[in-house]
Amino acid sequence: MVELDPLIRAFYAERYVEDDRLARSGHGRLEFLRTQELIRRCLPGPGATVLDVGGATGVHARWLAADGYAVTLVDPVEEHVAKAAEVGTFAAVSGDARALAQEDGSVDVTLLLGPLYHLVEAADRAQALAEARRVTRTGGLVVAAGISRYAGLLEYGTKGLIAEDNLHQFVEALATGRNYDEPDGFTNAYFHHADELRGEFERVGFSDIDVLGVEGPAAATLEHSAPEEVPRLLDSAVLLARLLENDPRTISTSFHFLAFGRV
Image (tube, rainbow, N blue to C red; front, top):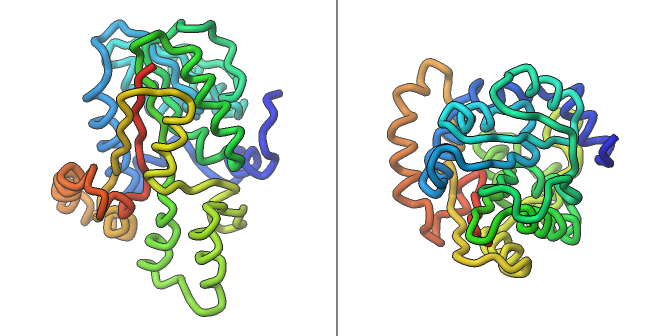
């Protein structure tokens, strides 16, 4: 069994339905569309090999395989791997982002769209990025997702759920980046500043690094919109996110960042 924080394992196995996360809410749909858009800009042509590390039940592996890529999904949660394997259009195996089984330079693209924010120690994040770099060929692409340091404040603040008696939790998370398991919320995680995520890529030795905002300033609006309102809002939200994706003054209004680097 892959070593994984028991609270994180329990969160995904018992409390959270990962399979439809990017389809059941307006924010999820915005995140999914923008993640596809940003990754597709940089992918090599169909037929290239993609390693989807922390790929969960295959939400991204599905469309990558449909686009013509040879995809292998790696995830530490056995339930996720079993569900992903049922799809049948890509390989799915258990594994740890910090100790990948793949050979050096064996893939064209490595995705880390979940591991970094569940590796709360900097050394573990550095090891995961180093492993991604190791298994990716020279000139290949590594893409990693991070959760914005401001995501919790924006989500809970716009829900009216920040008050004097819980404000200290958000202040602490903003100062340290650490999110602790909440029975009715998210599990143990690390939240990044955009420049901090860039620095982690730099220290591992990537080149041509770029860090972009995924959802843009409309993330919180979409998070709280009624389902029937989402189609009216979504196109505008995507255009807004696209316009401001690399603006240093607004990038942190996105709930997620994507960092890109070349080996």
